[in-house]
Length: 180
Image (cartoon, rainbow, N blue to C red):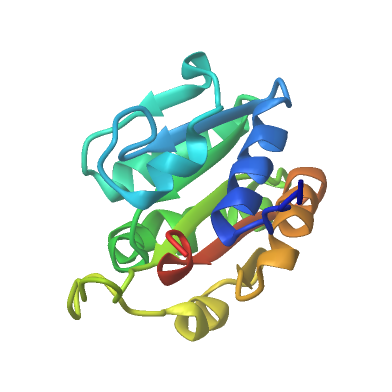
């Protein structure tokens, strides 16, 4: 009998990374579709305990403010924005607050921001859901690390580094890779 070994997919690495993050007592996952199905990111959180998830309505700027507040209180929020285009609505909190917090207070809260460049396959979500704003965010942010997950082999190490580093991270996933 032949044994067929399944190669790990992009989604498999994301699931493994979220499992790793969920084991840290300081982490908490928040955003849209973290507790209830509604986008592809939800399926990467299937093994994260429900008591580590906070489902939020669509209020992106408030979500970033909540994430910063949780970080100030000692949590490491994994703040999930299903589409990179939606993160634009949280720029004030991200750029003027989280990114400048250490300069303003001497304290650096840590947030792991998770987003995705919207999928174009099998259905193109259109220009409000599929943009890659990585370059613009790199120019706007001085103290937040911006990482594009273009290769599935970099996923686990990137999330490990984000958990253990002192800096906040904006981690950008590729929505077209979730279902391959």
